[in-house]
Image 1 (cartoon, rainbow, N blue to C red):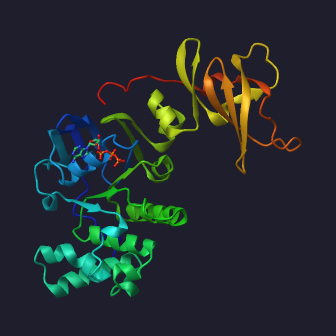
Image 2 (image 1 turned 135 degrees about the vertical axis):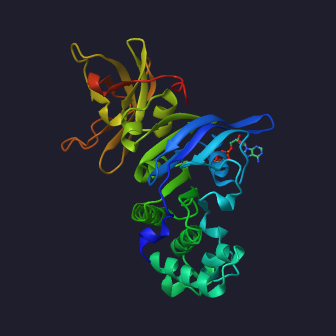
Length: 343
Ligand code: ATP
């Protein structure tokens, strides 16, 4: 099947306006504004309970919005039933019907819509071929590997020709090797199909690897939206810097700033005229391409420096060593303790 024929008629941005969800006393999503450009890969990233799944379910129509709107192109889809929105949800692989063949799993939603058997099997076969699962059409899910089940789940979600594919932790049931392989496949399918993918994850690595746009959420709010590079290189808030990892959060000249661990420089003696502070090495961890040095300092508490191995010394520092922590001024990024207004 030609991938472009899977994509629905016209591309459309997905826009959330003041979208909120309340469960009794809990404000799960606190009125978020977000535009996800048509044809982009967006990851909603954040710790457990931050409101990612509730947001996805409101987009899907599996949960009603307490306040706000969901627009898809020129249509306000906030109150439409799930099947009429132009969205489809891809669940984790185990959400396939165990008693149905791959073919019947993929054809299922067309059956529900009253499409005749020949037509729905033709479409399902085309989609299974697209995800390289043609030869497995008659197998049951239990006769397929995790990665193969994942492909069937994707074909099943695409059969309704959605404009937006919603993915809730789609890789979390897979082992680490398969996860990385299926991640690459998801990205390839997304760009070949030209569909909008909205993918919920709590994995920083997954979000950085897949996204055109990362949306970092915390306590029902959006902390920061940007490309993976923007989010990692210039975290806007203390929460984002700490959550993304690989950064130290320190106070320099009265300002809260982030400094990447791999830009955190160490010296054995104080450097004249270089701003910095004293610290003590508490741990060293060999990581193959670099060494992680754990530090404790009166000025900044716990820190991490990522340093290259010294070819002469191998691990250049040992626990107990006194060091001086410093940096290049261009590597400091000022942080806000609260998200920017509007998020
Ligand atoms: P996780 O990564 O653990 O799935 P999440 O970021 O997807 O978390 P949500 O599932 O959206 O978070 O939950 C946000 C908040 O809303 C949490 O405090 C959760 O306990 C609460 N919540 C979610 N669903 C319900 C529900 N059906 N009834 C009551 N509270 C709920």
